[in-house]
Amino acid sequence: MRGLAALLPTIVTIWIFVQSYIFIQDKISVYINLALVKLILWNTDRWSEKFLVDFWVYGKGKMAGLFLAIIGVCFIGAFVASVMGRTLYHFFEKALMRAPLIKKVYPYIKQITDFLLANRQISFTKVVALQYPRKGTWSVGLVTGSGLKRIIDSVEKDFLTVFVPTSPTPFTGYVIMTPKEDTIELDMTIEEALRFTISGGVITPAQHEAFQALTNKESGE
Image (cartoon, rainbow, N blue to C red):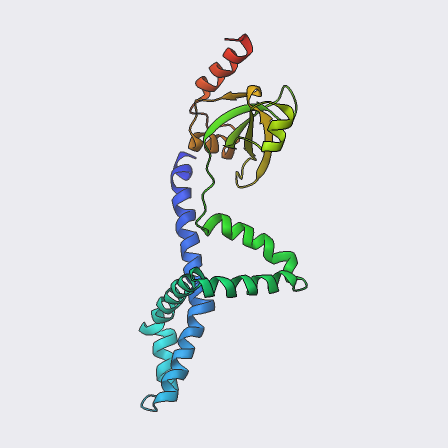
């Protein structure tokens, strides 16, 4: 079991990259190479189609499609970063959002890809413990802000906006606003809190500090 625990993350990582390469090569690169063959035949009749297909699609030249695909992705990224590209992208995206059936799938796929790939950072400032989802049950949460001004002005208390991740996938969770006085700041890093959530509470590198903080809070120290 220790051997599997040590090797499995590496094996799965390599498997994901290999499968990604195979998918790109079989589903994208091959068609780019076929387009190259057609382009060469259109410009010259020096080589036969069979020779070009054997070289570009199945032979040493098949990597060309992969490199062209990477260049194409970089070009699209640079184009979308421009004003014109961003405008056209938003127009295309709105059209997809209105398309039947597609609008039921595309927004959720986009949420996942934006979370994984978009250049956005969620700023977690500290880790706290709070009684959620009911009093007497403690959860670990990540502080993201100080709450909404309207609520703070109405209740006249200091609030915290806390993201409570779910286990074993901390990509999803609940965003709640709770009075600051009802939380306990834990001596844990963001990474430690995420590992605690992903492992279902098995990995607790700051277990002693969290327990001590809770004890001090309950004793009124």
